[in-house]
Every structure is written in C-alpha cells, then in structure tokens.
Amino acid sequence: MTDQRVTLTIDIEPTNHCNARCVFCPRDQTPHVGLMSPETFRRALDRAVEFRGVSLAELDLDVAVSLCGLGEPLLNRHLPDFIRQVRAEDLACTVSSNAALLDERRSAAILDAGLQRICVNVGEIDDRYGEVYKLPFQQTRDNLLRF
Image (cartoon, rainbow, N blue to C red; front, top):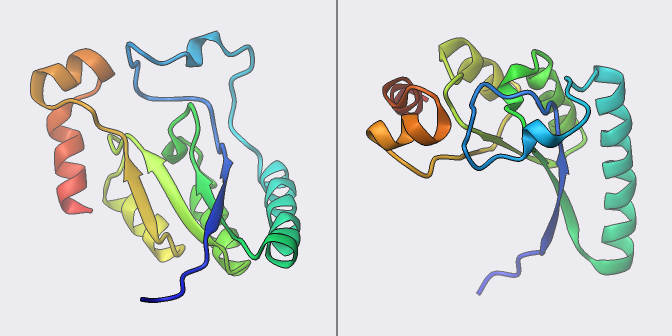
C-alpha cells in the first residue's frame, strides 16, 4: 500500500460567463458577471499558496487548484497563463469545462501550460445534450476525441 497524502482542492473561478445555457444552472441569478483579471487571479493564487503552507504544516494536507465555477474557464483568454502560474507554484491543476470550446488551439495552449487534469461536465448525449446544455453535442464530442 502506498502512502499518499490527502489533498484539499481550492476552486478559483476564472469567469462566471458561460457559452452554455443549461436548464439547471443558477448562473443567471448571480448579480455580477465577468472575467477574472490576471491581477485578481494572482492574489487568489497567492492566498492558495499561503494556505498550502499552513495546511501542510498544521494538517499534513497538500493543496491543489481547480479552475472551475459557474462559468466556462475556456472563455477567459488568460486561462493558459493561470495554469502556468499554478504549476509554477508546484500545485496540481485541474480545469472543469463543458468542452464545447476545447478546439485544437485552446487544447494545445492549456496542455502546453501544464494542465494535469480536465473534468468534463457532460450529463447527456445526442439530442438530449442539446436540449439541456443548448450546445452542439457533435462539436463537443469531436473536441473531446481530439483532445
């Protein structure tokens, strides 16, 4: 049995804008919609790094960062740089996406930046996918297969 450290994950939301219009999403009820600036991201990441130090020292728990939230992270053009900064701090990095925008250019950019894991939010397929997410299923499927 391997000794594996438990990891806490800190979510940082690069945007609450989204290209999907999911029937179940409460995003439209949020009063402020926007993209996270590089300066705000840096402050959030600095706090995550600070928390990691405390977490390791006091709880023996490591920290990772997940770039996710009510919005689609791929809409923030700074996402590759955000990933690069997370990795430069030696933190594990995950992105949660609906993958509809995961074209070749974006895929290459986030992989080159050091992304280690992507979580894809897909709960339906084919026509039902289009009804629920208001996105084209075929394009999303093709993006995932290419990725």
